[in-house]
Image 1 (cartoon, rainbow, N blue to C red):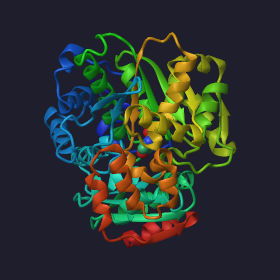
Image 2 (cartoon, rainbow, N blue to C red):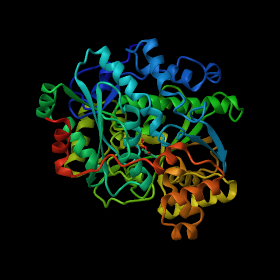
Image 3 (cartoon, rainbow, N blue to C red):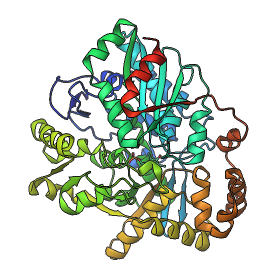
Length: 498
Ligand SMILES: *Cc1c(COP(=O)(O)O)cnc(C)c1O
């Protein structure tokens, strides 16, 4: 079956998968969605004996139908290699009555590596297929993890350049160090005087600026996006949910056909949307548990049917989820409208102009796949501490938001027999201070040096410090640019020399 993509806002017709990957965002500001949803065409029995790479092919071939088998397998082989510190790529660990799907074994120790190690290969292949001769400029807004993972993927890739905007005061010290020490002559890092939503809005504005597009083209450049709005990121994220399910079957934890719950610590709604798509292609999923931190705009949406970003932005210990506009929710909204682009566009216009929208009762009735809740800062740290004390297993702050919300779900649904997978989205080493604050608050308080906390974490968890962290101890700072939000475009032009 040939799968084409269309904008959630309905303008511009249908495009191929490779074109959708190249463009990132549709011309009308909407997001590309598959016109029809494919179905898995191999059985769990077959999948359970496949490697991660083989599973990736079986899932991705369903969505990226204009890629040849050789092209896709080549991208997969280059992406999921020794950059990951385990052959399993995404191992599962049982602790405290749930299965943690560890998605942080890649180069930058956050789950963004799962998709961003393959996106550059998909994009170059897509450019070749579509006879693109311009250099591709990847513009990325990051809440902390996407930027580093995207740069790790695109650094020194011929025919590409990558610029990353991050909120200067809104990321963890390790995240910031990871970014400003990034190597690669084609990389550019900018700290902005604003939050993630400001960064995302600024990037989106540049994407939809037709004048700017012409100017870039005249100089041999074109923009694309490595943000989770790109279907080239969404599709690789579906893979690990399928993989997790088949491992649970293989290990005898569930029987083929049993439903599982999937709990996802959510920010931009990309990771949980991938889980939703996994369900749509036939994976037996019961509830998709959407976990928010104190920026609980999604929880309120599930509870009331109103999405309202008009509220104070809270800086939490799970910065990659400090987001008030969850871009990928637009793809779910589109499904809830029964794929009605006019209705979707209207709601998104209302979000852009007034910062809120309310869905109809008929749409709300279709939200039964989801359960939403949130965890406070206190609950998040208590969850890290309890799990550590009970099992010795250490999770990061984002994963802890999910674990805390899963606790709430379990308390409210005592009769649900489904096994639960929790997406573990970052290594605790990426957030050493917050994690140590949960495990050993006295030590954390008197320790100033970030790396002393890394040492303490290694001792407490009995795990070796990841390479991604040791590298930072000596890496020189290579990026010092900062800018105000209105100057983002100017900063990019200066960098490109136009
Ligand atoms: C990006 C990120 C999230 C949120 O994922 P979304 O796809 O944006 O919902 C959660 N945890 C970590 C560690 C992340 O980097």
